[in-house]
Image: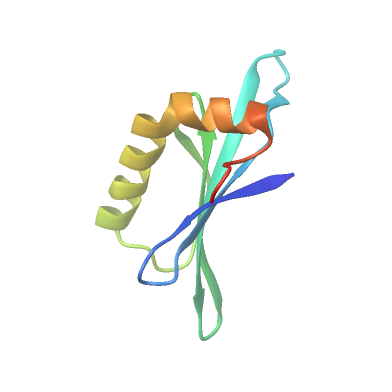
Length: 91
């Protein structure tokens, strides 16, 4: 299950997963950034809590990827809370 987080002005959409368990039994979440292009998508996927990049494809710049990493690092507690709650409640 993926939950919406936000959409940036450049059409990048950010979604995050439900809580999963890795091979060591640790709780993990995936946060995915994706932007449509003429030929598909630019994509980057991070794994929390390590904030490591699992997947990268397309033309995101190093600066954009660093910004995304900052978003997942700073939002780590909130992503876990929202995943436990079944997504972000919005008005």
